Length: 429
Ligand SMILES: Cc1ncc(COP(=O)(O)O)c(C=O)c1O
Image (cartoon, rainbow, N blue to C red; front, top):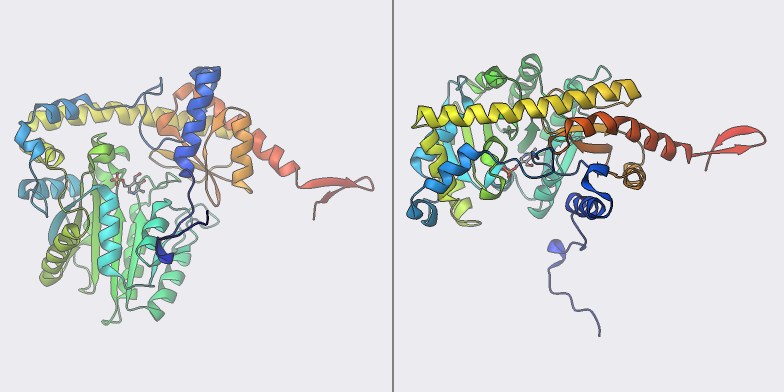
């Protein structure tokens, strides 16, 4: 029988497992065969307990379960419950609310905010800009929405944010497009764990102001703060003050997500929060994003919205949630410290890690290294420029063991490049 294709060419993609879910499935299978204690599964981008079960914040879950049935079952307004939108703004900025006009619209997590931003603020065919280490769905979201992702080098030779590369690439794109959407994930960048310093943020905003000198251009900075509640203390929001008093042709959209902050990944709740010096721009944002919601997923999850609203209306509940979150933050920090210390001892190079769920390991042939690691019962995600190791899902003890094994696997793969010819080492053709 011949194969009949129905999907339009622009929407046709090859099948196969998602890379991360595929590696996770293999890790689980191996655990079943040789025992969980003998496998290191560093593929999962969620906080797991040491025994591999999902960490769930009981304080958030108990409150969610206590909500009246109708608060969970009913539709939420398309833009989100008004009290949720207020709470999301408070949760997002903390003590560092920028001096500007601000509006929020509910989205299904940060992912929904990415989708609406790309769709509403760039033209078909436009380049969307991010760094060369990036979270894979940035590319997927750009592609399925008929845009393309372009990158600049994230780190300079001193392992700092590469402001020169950012300046050059953004200026190049602004030459040829009227609008530029910039996706910047900090603090606790996925996959590297990098967090821009306040000084680096100042340079980024300075560069954006420069791009905006031409009043016909529209610059949209999408600040992806998915992991902010696991990055440093409240002052890690200090850079957000820089979003006030911007030129009127610069718009900032901050993606607030409840997935990590409340360990409520599956409830699909968050908000896109617009910051602008221009009141019209924020009103336009609200109206357009509301319609974009209606035209895609329609409403958000009412129960999750009610939960966040209640947290900001009840000091005790807020304190309880913050206390429990602090416990998980410490757990994460201990794992990351353990991994970093062992990396130093093993001579394993990593990207500069500051906070967050992941550590990245630059290497050649990441797919081969990942395969070699699987032979040694370690499962990590192969990216274009290296591996992603999820410290969020691996116990402190296993974090201490993994770097030496990873280093050995990299050396093994490296050594395959070489052969002996006439008594001398030569690189294979
Ligand atoms: C960098 C980054 N941004 C955004 C998200 C969005 O997550 P969610 O849609 O669950 O809020 C994630 C989740 O893994 C992420 O890693």
